[in-house]
Image 1 (cartoon, helix red, strand yellow):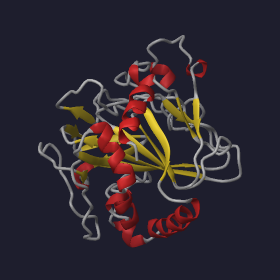
Image 2: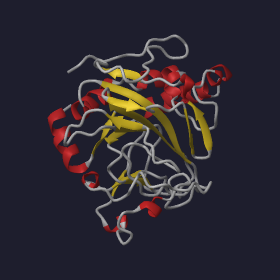
Image 3: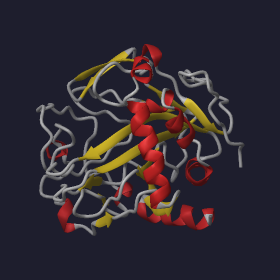
Image 4: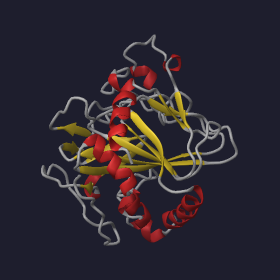
Length: 294
């Protein structure tokens, strides 16, 4: 694990990887166990959010509780974002046969939808260091024909979209949209086309992952194959970032989210700021793993 090279590559590209967490057969067996757990009524009764969007299942699925603290992932995150790391959200990204691609988008504070209020607020600023990261883990193979991710290297250095401009949710996921939100509506330069840029298609085997800042413009291809693609996003921030500041609820993708049961998980280091509610155990009373500072 060459963390110094990772940091240099990230500064240039806005992402690093793919890297191998597990071999495909190991991931296939592990994912089979998680699918079984996700169907367990007892686990669903412990969900943080009572709606169809599977946010934050690391808080009630033991396998996912352990995944967010995998050293192969977290050590790389520490090298990019600092020694103290909070996981503030996880989510699934399935693409079934025939599903459209996810349109190009770029965010930082996660002000998504009809509100200009972001979900993340940095209380300190370090030029060159991101205030958020996402680790995208391939639970299945992700090839071009079954909707692998795509990115524009270096695009994190320039804002192409005004994430605080309001967007209307149209209720449908189609090409060039982000699950019902059309980022073309908030392009700063309406004549700019992402397809004219150096687009990288991040094909991955099951068990691989890559790490990126959401400021790096990204999307995914359509699934033109006969097999599902399943990705899982682990979203983290340094501890100086306030999460859902002042919010008790929010609406997104046509669903309502009550934050009464939400909490962040300290996956590495220490929380010296105390800005966020931090949970130490998952819904089954199992302690989350926190890696030491490096």
